[in-house]
Image (cartoon, rainbow, N blue to C red; front, side):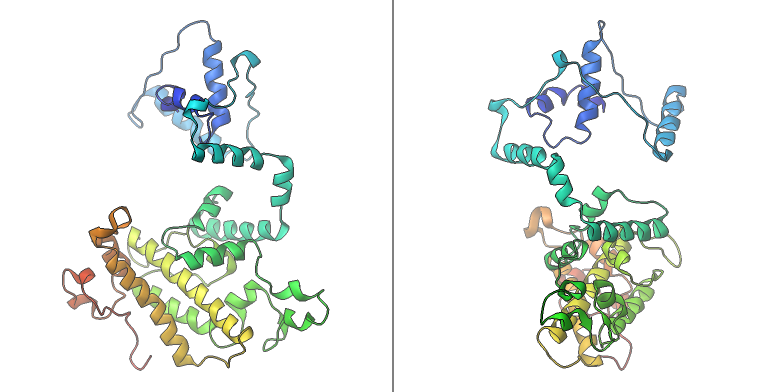
Length: 353
């Protein structure tokens, strides 16, 4: 906040506060300071340093976070002190695009178009699952941002975005389309198809076996297993794992994001092959091989991403090692630089695959 009122103030005002978080509150604070007749001095104080004023500020901040309802704060700015728009000589194409998009999204008509009942139900379920596991409910902004987590594959990001928006044509979508009503049902199970049913309930070969494989590898990793649900899959980018022993590392969290996303996406792909392409039910051996292939592909990608040629996208070898520790075959006898070696496979039980 201090930087926003001092060193960043002029630049933000020149840019019209485009892309600045809490812009309304910052603009109101700047206007209130300008309205004063005397100079105002701001001093940064190190947090948790034992100072009475700082400790009191921490208490007030905590009280504010725990309030069920926000306080009514007057954020009106005197017309003479209101700075609108942005300087033309500071404008770029990217800033102009963001400004136009912000104005469009702030209109009531646009917000009403975004007010989709099914989408709100899905995000609400995800928030409830995250709160149950982590004892902290995420904001809508945090949840939507997590759907684009960098640890997710590009195809899964598209898939989970469509799931959140109820964008796939399954179940009730076909109920009112003449001559296509039969597509609404999952015929082997005899129920109306839904994304919940496809990902976690369907009795067709694939769904249950994939989640059993996922549970097995998570247990091998030393993580507590939570039964899969649509809310859990939607919240996979936020949820922090619980270790059976000790504290989870950043590698454990990354591992959980990867295996949950790859498993959920594979369940959907098998369903589409069976329902849309009309192929026979997948065998247990085929399902196991395809699941392992998807996980091994991510291990191989991680191994390659540790090379410096990827620059900013390069992954640290330590993070990759922490991600796949206790998961890959012959983990104890791996060379020190296994991230540079080929042929690393997911561990499996004897007699499988």
